[in-house]
Amino acid sequence: MNALISFLVLCATLFVSPQPKKIRVHTLGDSTMEQQNPNVKDQRGWPQLLKAFFTDEVEVINPAKSGTSSKTYYNGIYWEKAKKAILPGDYVFIQFGHNDEKHGGVDGKIGTAANDSFRIYLTRYVTEVRALGGIPILFTPVVRKMFGPDGMLSRRGRHDLGEDAHNKIDKSLDANDTVSFNYPHNMRLVAQQLNCPLIDMTELTRHLVDSLGQSRAGEFIYNLTDGTHFGTSGALLFSSLAAKELRRQEILSQYCKLDPKLIVPFTSLSYGTVFSGTSPTQVFDVCYLGDKSSNSKINLTASDGFLLSTKADGEFKQTLELPASSKNGFVGYKLFVKASTNKIGTIAGFVKVTDNKETDKIVLVGDCLEVKDNQKAMVSYQLSANDKAETQGNVSALNETWTGMELKGYQTPESININGGKLFQTNVQINNIQGGVWPKEELDVVYTRYIQFGVKVVKGTELFVDSIGFYAGGGAKYRVVSSLTEDFSTPVTLGESKESYGSAVVANSFSPNQKIESGKTLHLRIYPWCKNATNNQSLSLYGVTIKGISRQL
Image (cartoon, rainbow, N blue to C red):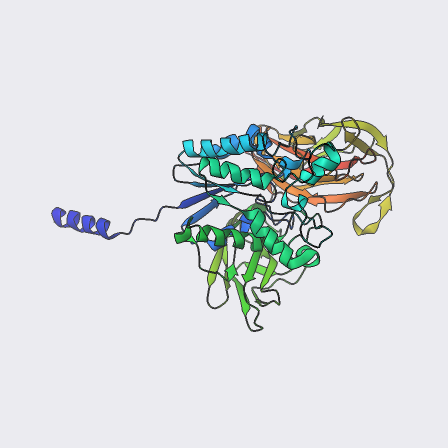
């Protein structure tokens, strides 16, 4: 009998299909590559939609980081962390160039020289990826929306700074030099010298943007106003170009879907830890590509306990039907899914997305905690006369610190905008960049410049942070990031200013739903930057508050 059982087990083992090995793709780069949080902002990195053009065997891992150049990504913590995740046989997509231009085409603190240090760092990436057993693929940078008087993209828009170097750095430089300050060209040379595959995203996106023209490119791709970053539709079009070129070059071609129409970038969404009686919401994208007919529809169905809407403050329903057609041949939706917190314990469900030909499913997960008998906790920095913090509950506050910034004093701004439009006047904290003059043409966050706050949890308790808020203004843009590690190796982007408000100060509010364990600390940084070179900007802050629910262990 035992022999028979052993034989049956052996047969079952032989006929069980082995799980297919995941093909892993890592994407290195700056904000045009970075995995942006759709709950926080409308900006997308183009690889965010790339997964939808591959079969399920492909996993996309995106450690790209906003504000980095080939130099600062390599010399900072990001490359060391990304390298640890690269396994033999993994593909590594490498795209830099935007922030390498920081100093007009020459070497500097952030930027690199196109024909020198840029090539050195690209060579290092390729060499080190190969040493890890990975397969490097170079990607030239996607274009900026910078048009010339002829109605076509300018050389600067195509990352060739030859003219700019002549006009702004040294008049003796040849304005017609299309090599020395040309970042895509020098990346192509590195690819040729190292026999490394290259996807020329500069040329691919140039043809697309030129064909659309300045107005339509701004409407469909660069709809975030700065001419560099893009939303869902831009990421969709750029990732489609990348996927087609990969297939043409027979790179991962056996895993490329043949002209998919229904694009669902997310396979799962996590609500994290939430509290009973709340209404946690997650944001996701759904797109449709290549259909101009008037009859196509996208149908979405949420499982029990979840509701869907096209607006954060709109009507939520269990099913949605959306038009899939567009005169442009593509359409993108930002959608919201709300979870019920009536039951304590695990949150589990799904959203089914279909066009009656293709079907995708987004898995929904989370944990719901009961709030009964728990204690409120808070740290609050008023910042109207000093930087001292007040606390409530089982927490302590970190001292406010400045890096690359300095405190200028406390004074009354034009106004502070309170919810409902009510205005009042009070002193706020005025902060400025060290030296007083902001660099020009900063289009994105600078991670070496920030003001930091934080909350530490008393041992024997744990804290669930459900609210972070403050007032900010002064004209500088800013990004808000939290981390449970002091070096910010585990950052969580909470939000970003959408526009400059001058000296007026406006309210910011975030719901991080972050758990802080006994004795641990949550660090909060505000990273300011400024688009124009000026000494008239500042970062004004008032009422930085971190709130949550504390409970004894």
